[in-house]
Length: 472
Image 1 (cartoon, rainbow, N blue to C red):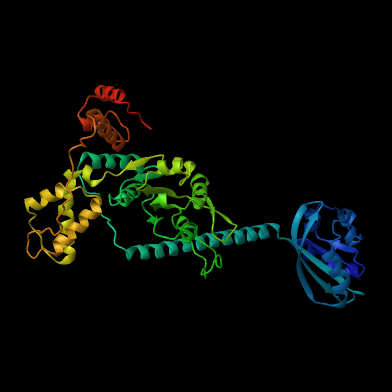
Image 2: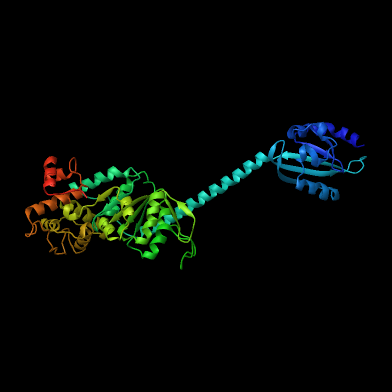
């Protein structure tokens, strides 16, 4: 009766594309379709009548299948669908979906078991690959979203403050040399160290470099190392996890993560605590750091522009600044000249600031008396451009008409005469050395010390040898 039943369904089973196998109640193979033989590389003579577990050197002895056939199906007539991950000797490691059901056919004593088999290895592989890809992209989107939110929060804080966003004003040789250095370095990813006294416009140079760089599509991220307590600088630079310290109620991205792919301006780098300098050095060298309260290493691609009004070399010699960090930052130094060394730029600066301040205050200043301009041009300007801006703002506020009225007396006049206790050679040596430092020790060529001093390069070199002037 079993044979007659199978004969009726043989053509149907044979036409099925997926492998099918029919078992009797004792779990011996009654028949299988051609697809089963092809898929598992077995012959009908090796299959029919054999115990299912013995097929192909017992490659079908699968614990999950044994439990289904021996425990579940004999007691139930339902349809069972499950997956097994198994190493089939004949075809290798596969993920198979098995569909099993008990058949109670008319005229057939006891029951038969129909087992349909589907190879879902490739589908599961692509499914898992897609899930991993979605997870990876989701994590990337989350990271970019966090970075964007942090950058937005940073920019909102910056908007609250007043900064000079305009271009650097000037046409003197000293400032033109700064422009030349900016053009030289802007298109690279080299770290830059900007030197200069307070109020000379070091941040403007940093913005000019960033604005001409390949990273200009992103905002310049800034941090003043002197504006925060030492215990908060690490959190601001590298971020922190929730609960990393008292008051850390949520996770926060540091400036390095906000500036990933952009430029980070570290103002007053000389104020950075000595204990944090190794961590900054590691980011510069390897692009790696850990958030405060986390052991996970993060990688960033950040260009660093640092600025200081200190003599970092002297700080290194005193042990207040790491020598290896100084070497990493001092690859391309740019010195911003003090205002007293570019007094010819004062008329341009005066016109620029008066126009801007007057518009902001709702006034009209049309005349700057010659006496006022002369006083401004002969003052020593210890506070540099920042002091000039403050003096001009007070003057505009106190001017009731179109003529600028200077309030400050500016008694400290610029001293052009050398000290009387110095020899001529000593004065000459100091002046030549100062010009060389201003030009980055460029002896000849455009914007060089020889050009500024009005000397032939061979003459200048001879004077340097005579006065024992050597590059540090």
